[in-house]
Length: 398
Image 1 (cartoon, one colour):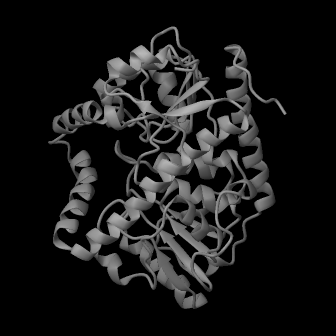
Image 2 (image 1 turned 90 degrees about the vertical axis):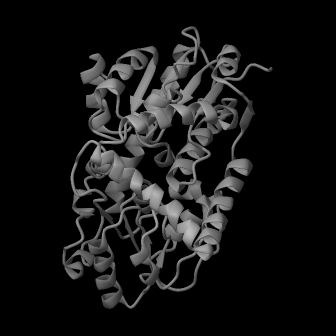
């Protein structure tokens, strides 16, 4: 095997817009730097990873927060069994994700076990894990994104990796104390993650930006169709949580503007009440189409981190809603707080019971927002380049 510069360990395969786009952005960063790379193909490792995850969830079967969180997935599966049309729609969406993964990523050979990957690890010059919520408790238990399979002699980098939660259970906290010190070049995506690493290891690590922020709107637009996905003015909705009050807020805006509602439905769970909510509900939407829908929207409404990111990159009028009602251990509110705080847009974070009209009149100073994003972008690139320098890995410095 020809020696590679970077092995990227990402969730490129997930049927999730943010997951695939951040994985693509990580690859795009190394491509832009002129660093040869490939993304580790996960197919052969999935059985082992899934066994470890199942064991974790079985240990949490009496934890009400975890059960509630996973019930959404169960409902989605049950809905496909009962509703043939929904099953077909979901299949169409999943094909868009799968085609994107095949076409857009430089994938490695298939490794059929962790032992096989460990044996091949020395043939890479660096392993890079990130970004996204790869250090969720279930993922720590799966022991893939921890990079524990990588020998000590091979340099390791965590790029904007997220814990997804503000607190780890005792067992996973113990595992984190072991794997975090092995990652020579460690960065996190959120301030809450920075605090976790400090509390667990005593180590100060930088907060860097999500890889999707590393490229501006013009750079993202090079990869996508210029034509609008749908005609006319519209309110784009991408909600992962089931919070009816947030849909009511959008209805207020529809009444004020007269614009149609376009929604990506049932992304994390099947939400029956959403069936009659939008005017359009397309399913032939992969990551590229997702960006187009944000780019050409009149307003964007979301409880998603990455939808908020692309709304800012494209200078949209957007509103981000709290997906979780509390900041408990399964809550992922933290990453949205962190993002909006970094660009001084905490006022865009809503519950849903607000009056829409005065909020529509508030403008966003995108000169300031984009300047802050440019600073974050440069800080993150500096972190990566300095890490490469320390390992004498050559890259394009122009």
